[in-house]
Length: 280
Ligand SMILES: Nc1ncnc2c1ncn2[C@@H]1O[C@H](COP(=O)(O)OP(=O)(O)OP(=O)(O)O)[C@@H](O)[C@H]1O
Image 1 (cartoon, protein in one colour):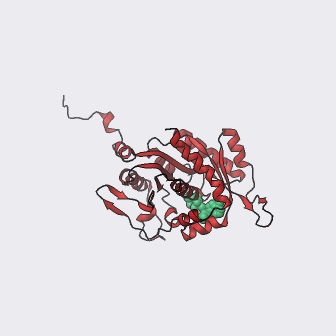
Image 2: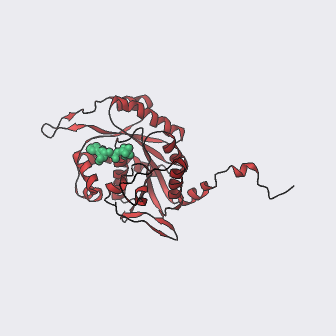
Image 3: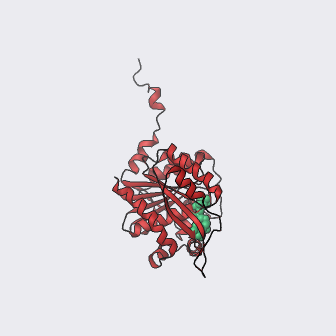
C-alpha cells in the first residue's frame, strides 16, 4: 500500500481553519454585530461599540466585513487611509492607541467603485482578512457583518472561530419582527450566544416637548424580545448628530467631547458586551 496517499477525510478538511484560529488566538472576546436587513444602523452600532469599549481602556479591533457597503472608513474619516503590510501581516489602521480598524473599503482605489465580485472572491477577501490582519493581543474584536441572513453573512460568520456573542440591530417597525426573528435563528444556527437586541431609530425626541414621536411605529422589537426571551440592550432615538458625525467622520472626537442622550443610552450596549470578558 502506498503510504503517501492522503485519506479522503484529510483532503476534505478546511486547510484555512488553523491559520484563522492561530491569527485570532490572542483575542479575548469576538463579537458580531448583525442585522436582518440593511440600513438599520448596524455599522453605526459596531463603530460606536468599538469606540465605547476603547474609551473604557480596552484594546479593541473593528473589522468591517460589509463588502458592498463598507461605511466604517467614512464613519472614522479614513477614506484616504492606505494599508501597510509588514512581516507580521496586514496592519490595521490605528485611530486610538488602543483602537484599530480594518475594512474592505481600505482596499478600494476609488470610493465610488462598487465591488462587483462573485461569492468566492468575496469570501477569499474576508478569509484573507481573518488570516492575515495583524491585530496583536486584543480584548475585543467587533465584527460588522454584511446585512441580512443569507449565504454571505452566514459564510463570513462561519469563518470566525468561537464567537463570544452577537448584538442584533433592528428598527422598530412591525416588519422588524420578521427580520429580528431571522437574525435570532441565524445566531442560534451558528451557536453564537445572543447578547441582546438594539432597537435603533426608536422614535424622534421632540426638541420642544421632549416627548418621543414614534416615527416608525413601535411594539415590534418588544414582542420579539418577549417571544425569544432576549434582552433589549438599548432603545436609541433618531439622533441627527449621529448621522452628521458619521458623514463628517468625527466619531472618535465627538464621543470624547459630547454626551448626547443617544450616547448615554448606548452605554448599556457597551456594558453588556463588556460583560462577555467576565464570563471568560
Ligand atoms: N439612531 C440614528 N439616528 C440618526 N441617524 C442614524 C441612526 N442610526 C443610524 N443612522 C444613520 O443611518 C444611516 C445607515 O446607518 P448604518 O450605515 O449604520 O446602517 P447599516 O445597517 O450598517 O447599513 P448597511 O445595510 O448599508 O450595512 C447612516 O447614515 C447613519 O448615520
